[in-house]
Length: 211
Image 1: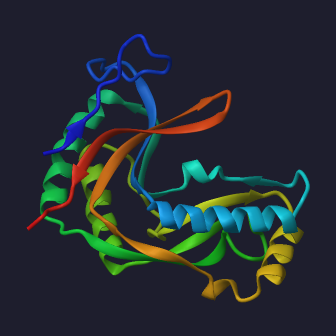
Image 2: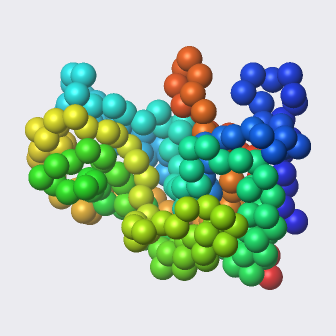
Protein backbone atom coordinates (compact mmCIF):
# COMPACT_ATOMS: atom_id res chain seq x y z
CA UNK A 1 0.00 0.00 0.00
CA UNK A 2 1.22 3.48 -0.71
CA UNK A 3 1.29 6.16 1.92
CA UNK A 4 -0.21 9.46 0.77
CA UNK A 5 0.69 12.39 2.97
CA UNK A 6 -1.94 15.10 3.24
CA UNK A 7 -0.64 18.44 4.40
CA UNK A 8 -2.60 20.61 6.80
CA UNK A 9 -4.42 23.33 4.92
CA UNK A 10 -3.13 26.15 7.12
CA UNK A 11 0.54 25.41 6.46
CA UNK A 12 2.48 27.66 4.07
CA UNK A 13 2.85 26.05 0.63
CA UNK A 14 0.64 23.15 1.78
CA UNK A 15 -0.60 20.64 -0.75
CA UNK A 16 -4.37 20.27 -0.70
CA UNK A 17 -4.73 16.85 -2.30
CA UNK A 18 -8.48 17.35 -2.63
CA UNK A 19 -8.00 20.35 -4.91
CA UNK A 20 -7.94 19.71 -8.64
CA UNK A 21 -6.91 23.32 -9.34
CA UNK A 22 -3.68 23.41 -7.33
CA UNK A 23 -0.54 22.90 -9.40
CA UNK A 24 2.89 21.83 -8.19
CA UNK A 25 6.40 21.09 -9.45
CA UNK A 26 6.75 17.34 -9.02
CA UNK A 27 9.00 14.36 -9.68
CA UNK A 28 9.34 10.65 -8.89
CA UNK A 29 12.52 9.66 -7.06
CA UNK A 30 14.04 8.62 -3.78
CA UNK A 31 16.52 9.95 -1.19
CA UNK A 32 20.07 8.72 -0.68
CA UNK A 33 21.29 6.87 2.40
CA UNK A 34 22.91 8.89 5.18
CA UNK A 35 26.32 7.40 4.38
CA UNK A 36 26.12 8.38 0.71
CA UNK A 37 24.88 11.88 1.54
CA UNK A 38 27.80 12.38 3.93
CA UNK A 39 30.27 11.23 1.28
CA UNK A 40 28.76 13.59 -1.30
CA UNK A 41 28.74 16.44 1.25
CA UNK A 42 32.46 15.87 1.78
CA UNK A 43 32.98 16.10 -1.99
CA UNK A 44 30.99 19.35 -2.19
CA UNK A 45 33.04 20.87 0.64
CA UNK A 46 36.23 19.80 -1.10
CA UNK A 47 35.11 21.34 -4.38
CA UNK A 48 34.10 24.57 -2.65
CA UNK A 49 37.62 24.87 -1.31
CA UNK A 50 39.10 24.27 -4.77
CA UNK A 51 36.73 26.48 -6.74
CA UNK A 52 35.90 29.66 -4.82
CA UNK A 53 33.88 32.46 -6.39
CA UNK A 54 30.43 33.29 -7.71
CA UNK A 55 30.47 31.20 -10.87
CA UNK A 56 29.20 27.98 -9.34
CA UNK A 57 26.04 27.03 -7.45
CA UNK A 58 26.32 24.14 -4.98
CA UNK A 59 23.52 21.78 -4.05
CA UNK A 60 22.64 21.73 -0.35
CA UNK A 61 23.55 18.21 0.90
CA UNK A 62 20.14 18.06 2.58
CA UNK A 63 18.61 18.14 -0.91
CA UNK A 64 20.66 15.27 -2.34
CA UNK A 65 18.30 12.86 -4.08
CA UNK A 66 17.88 10.86 -7.26
CA UNK A 67 15.18 11.79 -9.75
CA UNK A 68 13.72 8.79 -11.59
CA UNK A 69 11.17 10.82 -13.60
CA UNK A 70 10.54 14.58 -13.63
CA UNK A 71 6.80 15.19 -13.94
CA UNK A 72 6.66 18.93 -14.64
CA UNK A 73 6.51 22.45 -13.23
CA UNK A 74 2.75 22.89 -13.31
CA UNK A 75 1.35 19.47 -12.45
CA UNK A 76 -2.34 19.44 -11.61
CA UNK A 77 -3.09 17.33 -8.57
CA UNK A 78 -5.83 15.53 -10.51
CA UNK A 79 -2.98 13.92 -12.50
CA UNK A 80 -1.30 12.59 -9.35
CA UNK A 81 -4.16 10.26 -8.37
CA UNK A 82 -3.96 7.90 -11.39
CA UNK A 83 -0.15 7.93 -11.19
CA UNK A 84 -0.34 6.86 -7.53
CA UNK A 85 -2.39 3.81 -8.54
CA UNK A 86 0.08 2.75 -11.23
CA UNK A 87 3.17 3.35 -9.08
CA UNK A 88 1.59 1.25 -6.32
CA UNK A 89 1.41 -1.67 -8.75
CA UNK A 90 4.95 -1.13 -10.05
CA UNK A 91 6.37 -1.01 -6.52
CA UNK A 92 4.52 -4.19 -5.55
CA UNK A 93 6.11 -5.97 -8.51
CA UNK A 94 9.65 -4.70 -7.85
CA UNK A 95 11.98 -6.15 -5.25
CA UNK A 96 14.47 -3.93 -3.36
CA UNK A 97 17.76 -3.54 -5.19
CA UNK A 98 21.24 -2.16 -4.58
CA UNK A 99 22.81 0.83 -6.31
CA UNK A 100 26.46 1.89 -6.39
CA UNK A 101 27.22 5.61 -6.26
CA UNK A 102 30.44 6.45 -8.09
CA UNK A 103 32.11 8.68 -10.65
CA UNK A 104 31.78 12.36 -11.48
CA UNK A 105 30.62 13.88 -14.76
CA UNK A 106 29.00 16.91 -16.39
CA UNK A 107 26.03 17.78 -18.60
CA UNK A 108 25.82 18.43 -21.48
CA UNK A 109 29.56 17.71 -22.12
CA UNK A 110 33.06 18.68 -20.96
CA UNK A 111 33.31 21.43 -23.60
CA UNK A 112 30.17 23.19 -22.32
CA UNK A 113 29.74 21.95 -18.74
CA UNK A 114 26.70 23.31 -16.95
CA UNK A 115 25.81 20.63 -14.39
CA UNK A 116 28.19 18.53 -12.28
CA UNK A 117 26.82 15.17 -11.22
CA UNK A 118 27.71 12.04 -9.27
CA UNK A 119 27.02 8.80 -11.15
CA UNK A 120 24.79 5.84 -10.32
CA UNK A 121 25.45 2.22 -11.32
CA UNK A 122 22.40 -0.08 -11.31
CA UNK A 123 20.72 -2.01 -14.11
CA UNK A 124 17.67 -2.57 -11.88
CA UNK A 125 17.28 1.19 -11.51
CA UNK A 126 17.27 1.62 -15.29
CA UNK A 127 14.58 -1.05 -15.60
CA UNK A 128 12.49 0.68 -12.94
CA UNK A 129 12.94 4.05 -14.65
CA UNK A 130 11.59 2.65 -17.93
CA UNK A 131 8.45 1.38 -16.19
CA UNK A 132 7.93 4.67 -14.32
CA UNK A 133 8.41 6.66 -17.52
CA UNK A 134 5.79 4.58 -19.33
CA UNK A 135 3.42 4.90 -16.40
CA UNK A 136 3.80 8.69 -16.34
CA UNK A 137 3.13 8.92 -20.08
CA UNK A 138 0.02 6.74 -19.71
CA UNK A 139 -1.24 9.07 -16.99
CA UNK A 140 -1.00 12.11 -19.25
CA UNK A 141 2.42 13.51 -18.40
CA UNK A 142 4.73 14.69 -21.18
CA UNK A 143 6.78 12.07 -23.03
CA UNK A 144 10.45 12.07 -22.06
CA UNK A 145 12.56 12.04 -25.24
CA UNK A 146 15.95 11.92 -23.54
CA UNK A 147 17.39 8.60 -22.36
CA UNK A 148 17.48 8.08 -18.60
CA UNK A 149 20.95 8.74 -17.19
CA UNK A 150 20.90 8.06 -13.44
CA UNK A 151 22.78 10.80 -11.62
CA UNK A 152 22.81 13.06 -8.57
CA UNK A 153 23.29 16.77 -9.27
CA UNK A 154 25.90 18.37 -7.00
CA UNK A 155 26.64 21.71 -8.69
CA UNK A 156 25.73 24.05 -11.54
CA UNK A 157 28.49 25.90 -13.38
CA UNK A 158 28.61 29.18 -15.22
CA UNK A 159 32.22 28.95 -16.43
CA UNK A 160 34.11 26.13 -18.18
CA UNK A 161 37.25 26.71 -16.14
CA UNK A 162 35.46 25.68 -12.95
CA UNK A 163 35.05 22.14 -14.24
CA UNK A 164 38.69 22.05 -15.32
CA UNK A 165 39.84 23.03 -11.83
CA UNK A 166 37.60 20.42 -10.19
CA UNK A 167 38.68 17.64 -12.55
CA UNK A 168 42.38 18.44 -12.20
CA UNK A 169 42.15 18.76 -8.44
CA UNK A 170 40.23 15.53 -7.87
CA UNK A 171 42.28 13.40 -10.25
CA UNK A 172 40.56 10.39 -11.81
CA UNK A 173 36.94 11.47 -11.31
CA UNK A 174 35.62 8.26 -12.88
CA UNK A 175 36.93 6.23 -9.94
CA UNK A 176 35.52 8.38 -7.14
CA UNK A 177 33.27 6.24 -4.93
CA UNK A 178 30.56 7.35 -2.50
CA UNK A 179 29.20 4.03 -1.26
CA UNK A 180 26.16 1.90 -1.99
CA UNK A 181 22.75 1.26 -0.46
CA UNK A 182 19.50 -0.59 -1.04
CA UNK A 183 16.50 1.11 -2.62
CA UNK A 184 13.39 -0.13 -0.82
CA UNK A 185 10.81 2.47 -1.89
CA UNK A 186 10.07 5.14 -4.48
CA UNK A 187 8.25 8.40 -3.85
CA UNK A 188 6.48 11.33 -5.46
CA UNK A 189 7.94 14.65 -4.37
CA UNK A 190 6.88 18.21 -4.83
CA UNK A 191 9.47 20.97 -5.08
CA UNK A 192 9.09 24.61 -4.05
CA UNK A 193 11.21 27.56 -2.99
CA UNK A 194 11.37 29.22 0.40
CA UNK A 195 13.67 31.88 1.80
CA UNK A 196 16.29 29.27 2.73
CA UNK A 197 16.28 27.70 -0.73
CA UNK A 198 14.53 24.90 -2.58
CA UNK A 199 12.53 22.37 -0.55
CA UNK A 200 11.77 18.79 -1.62
CA UNK A 201 8.77 17.30 0.13
CA UNK A 202 7.53 13.72 -0.17
CA UNK A 203 3.78 13.54 -0.81
CA UNK A 204 3.45 9.82 -1.60
CA UNK A 205 5.61 6.77 -0.86
CA UNK A 206 5.52 3.30 -2.45
CA UNK A 207 7.37 0.46 -0.64
CA UNK A 208 8.98 -2.08 -2.95
CA UNK A 209 7.90 -5.71 -2.70
CA UNK A 210 9.06 -7.60 0.41
CA UNK A 211 8.60 -10.97 -1.31
